[in-house]
Length: 313
Image 1 (cartoon, rainbow, N blue to C red):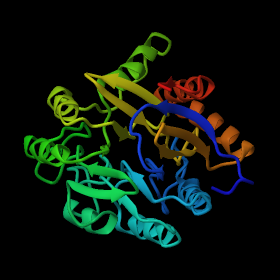
Image 2 (cartoon, rainbow, N blue to C red; image 1 turned 90 degrees about the horizontal axis):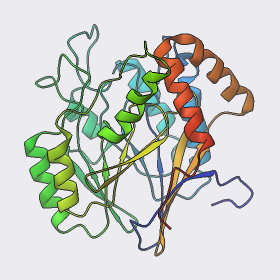
Image 3 (cartoon, rainbow, N blue to C red; image 1 turned 180 degrees about the horizontal axis):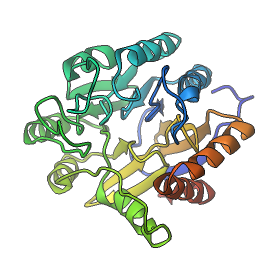
């Protein structure tokens, strides 16, 4: 890491994974849009925010960049082209699982990249996938659906077939890290609890039937699951699974996660991709967008003010 650059605030200190020195970034929910503007996602700035993340990551000497998805606004071909242009400047391997905005939905009015095409374009060519990143085994699974399932919903679910694949992959994975888009109940419950302050706040789509997935991860000894989806930094512990939810790069608090594994454990840092003025603008616009956006912004600000969210050291 360039010692002249701020390392980022510590979001979490984890006892696991622990092992050979490995550094990786997690970039979530960029929602790149080149023909839209406004909303809490700051579409007109989304490409620039992703590019800022890539430029910063290139100075960090990472082994890979992981993404829990929602790379584009709604899977538009022109927006995938913009993502590809930004990622062409990335100096590290990039591995993503699809988010709910990356997979075909019945409301689409444009051609969609099929999930198989997403896997070819933004991963090792298959879903689910397993890749070695430094001393870690990264296992990516699709919770967001295909043209054949969850087609009419933005909820998530990991299929029985993918859970069986996970069980097999975990059986011989020494330091497993799981990448999935949707969140486990403790993180979702944090959003629901905020409705006491914002009763009209809508609940974002959730992970359906999370228990079998959590059981598979615990039985297989998965160290941590990285998610995205809610656009705020958060952590939870569900049935023995430690979840780290990554912030979005597109809207407040525009940032990515920088993770470093050593024999003593893993440190997760929060690295902004906008300056103070950009963060302030994003906060103001997101709080004014809707009750739900205002609630999520309040949650994000509270989480940032509470770092580290977990310290297992």
